[in-house]
Image (tube, rainbow, N blue to C red; front, side, top):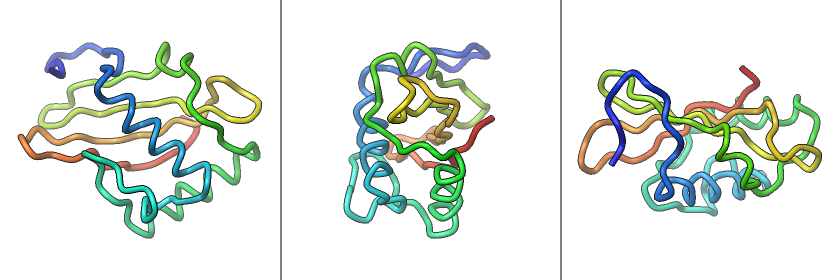
Length: 121
């Protein structure tokens, strides 16, 4: 159960696997999640996928599978109608990089996670 308060919370165990699968898709440049259909995750539209790809390329270091250290810094927060997730990505050179995946989950029984962006905040 996700909290609905003003605090930041660690990403629950149930939501870590989808984020790991998203990161794995991004590692192989599947930015729209065409080849990686993930339970509870929406496909990513073309313009968002291009922005994500451009920001990852500009970072200059290839992505790697999420390191367990990611979960020490990644959080979610209630935003009055939806939950905002911020998940720090892993690269070939950093267990936890400055690149952050931003995703939104609406407050609805059948809501699916929507990846909004990846960038350095």
